Image (cartoon, rainbow, N blue to C red; front, top):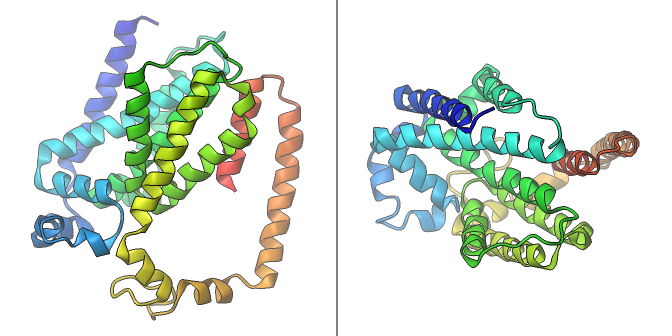
Length: 297
């Protein structure tokens, strides 16, 4: 497939997603962010005790107040996700050229997602701003790992390394669960797979590790999370609307019986995935399967 055809495909995809953002009415929390609260969120220091989603909050404020920003954000982030999925597929089977099939399927799955998923992510700016941008870095890391696996001669310019480090920090300010996932991902890769990488890419991994951990620290030192742990947050609670500490909530919710059932299911699924991966001859596909299983669990 020619470069022009590929660029045309992604440009059309960008326009389609962008129009969704442009035409999407403000719903739910969007009205909150698009009015007085959003206007005073950063100037009045509300961000210091509300949550650590600093970039996600900045993005949703901008999207609710400036329509072209909503168009650009909806166009850029889903298109980037689709593009990364295509690049990951190409790393797994570079010898098989099936064009933009992976991109087309990924785009179709996003556009045809169930109503429950659509309304939580694409259906309002507040959900989109946190969940779509945060999904990019885990895919980007997976692409880097597959690209550099058993490739000892790779070289990254200093500018690229600085940008990767900045991205590894910035990605931590969108959604808490992805912030933790990013930390676990890079630690897993660094511990178990670093021997398969060249010395130069190991430096990139070290930068990502440092950036993810730094970003996580900067997010979770926000005053909101201490209040949630202690059950003193005025806005968020962990047990049926009543104030309770997170530790007591976990103790009550996750009983020994519950842990045994979940542990057994995870063990069965783990055994199945191990045997399944052993039958895969493609090393990069096997690596992708194991990393994907880890993220599911």
